[in-house]
Image: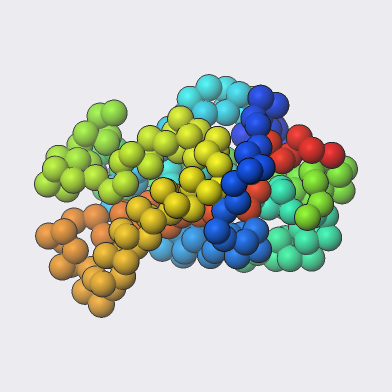
Length: 159
Length: 96
């Protein structure tokens, strides 16, 4: 499942890398800052009043355009970031990073605040929200093994 | 569009980083060279983050008390996305 997300989002066979210009930030610094930025969202996501619900496009996993909340998108982008790392890094470091995210607790607290598209208080027993909770649980449980498997299959480049 | 329009209205005619959000939506960040990301996109994010940090002690003073954490999380998200593509450009995954 998550493998499909990775394939659908990170591969672009038509992309051309600009080798003439170089970014002013090193790869290591950019990666560290990116992880810190994503961790900030996982930590402070429940404080969002009205979620942005950005539109996300994937070809396989969710088939077309889909509105995703910011924590969901952050989860996907974190997965994409992790997927580029070499195998040893994923196994040693990223698994612990991903497991440290309290995604499910964030999602539960989000349910108790309010739905972003209605501004109404939503009971925790609301059916479709429980479905979303289940979906996120599945995603969070699937990411770690899938990331490791992807890395071990050496589909992704080493640093 | 309706959600974003409502957010625009509720925040008193203001949105945080709308151009960069659209750039993310249309994969413009993913396809931008690293130098463009660091020189054009990240400074815009950093400007907003600096403004947000100035209201760190009292978020209610930020934009009439509207959307401090919403904007903060969006800014950090776009910062993370920009830096992700700086660290690992999209097409690099096709290299072997």
